[in-house]
Amino acid sequence: MAQREIELILMRQLASYLAQPILLVNANGDLLFFNEPAEAIVGKRFDEIVDIRRGEWTALFKPSDNHGAPIKREDLPLTIAIDKRQPAHLRYWIQGLDGVRRKVENTAFPLVGQAGRILGAVGIFWEIDCA
Image (cartoon, rainbow, N blue to C red):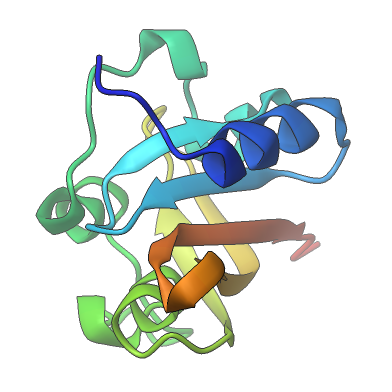
């Protein structure tokens, strides 16, 4: 395993102590970590996931709008945070890896290190109760 930047290590450590579902990706958009509270939304435990690469997110989670129309990868908050280096927010539907559809609200922001190095992005999720 390659050595990670200290900021990513510290962000993962912080996420592991928080009750809010948090997901961490690297500068390529590949999954690095999600915390225990995020497991309920993802539909699997982090240690059960092999790798999720940038291009696999939409195929795995099938993000869609309220009408069931697919949401393009470039319109998802984590992609915007990586590609445009700006925070983004969206409410949409996903299908967890357990097959359950969930309405989520997602805010993502880029992790930018010293000298403007893009290190990755953080996604914070809320499951929306549709009852």
